[in-house]
Amino acid sequence: MATRLKPVVWGLCLSPLATLAGRGYLGRLTANPIEYLTHQTGFWALVLLCATLAITPLRRLTGWSWLVRLRRLLGLFAFGYAALHFTIWLAIDRGFAWDDILADLVKRPFITAGFAALLLLLPLAITSTRGWVRRLGRHWLWLHRLIYLAAPAAALHFFWKRSSKLDVFEPVLFAALIALLLAARIPGWLHHRAAATRS
Image (tube, rainbow, N blue to C red; front, side, top):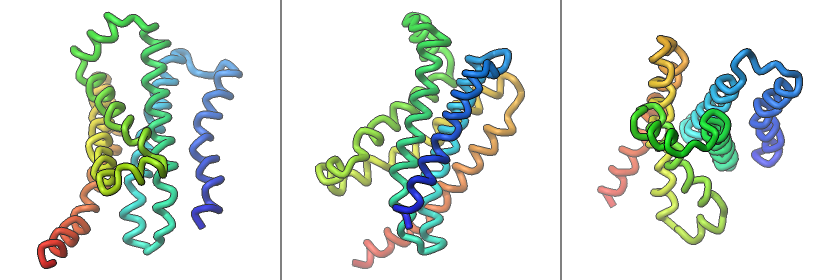
């Protein structure tokens, strides 16, 4: 099932990028194209992070173990959109003005949170291959739990960014969804811990 669905997932994940490219070609990136591109890439990074986090609860609810085989692909696309989001800010918005960039990272909390989220996702993207899974063994699972920190950091980045404009509906929605997806893991974690204690 996962093999048949992978082309669909590829298409769905690439469609926002294709839409942005099409709008850019037609000159329809709104009156503020940099802000629009930055928002859209960040928005889809969050959507795909949530989709990645949703795989485990969905698998437990449905018993569809094949869902796990889609998680890496979704996670890599989430990182890809996050990296593109950061690159647009770095190269187009700030024009590689390193003094201003460093000042923003230190003085503007929403940028600090976003950069922290990207840094937390980076080792997950690097070690997503089967070779790294074999090399790291059981440590691979512990490393990939960094997503539990990256997702809230990304949500916080979005909230702080929008709160200055008093436009927090989307950030609050993402934060609530991420909190729900993380909380859904607690029963499984408690069950695993109880089983480990009994053994």
